[in-house]
Length: 165
Image (cartoon, rainbow, N blue to C red):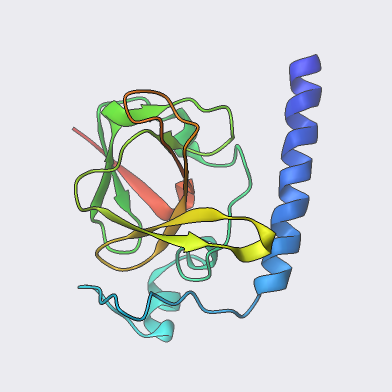
């Protein structure tokens, strides 16, 4: 019972913070670093047409999905996690782990699959993770993950798809 109550309160707090953050950023377009060019580009109208509203919010507006809402949290088959914006392979299932945060987490990205940049939005110092092929926002990386890297790539499940091998 305590775990259910704790999970409920944590999810509610995160959801409230996410909604406040989304409200503060509504309408702000996700822009790539000025010195970065991406192989896959689309107009805003094209992105909106090809993505669901939830995917657009995360991938193009740097939103955050609700914790514990992604079916990818429960994906344990062997395979790869791909960018929902361009289908580039991002993470191997071999590096996925249960972080308890409510979002799919990995201790390593595939080589050259992501780019990182500082993110100081909302008064926090974090490192944003983008798809290296299309520049879509995937989530953030933190230094509190397991060995061998000590990293926790905390990704939005709606930003990815899964391909079983």
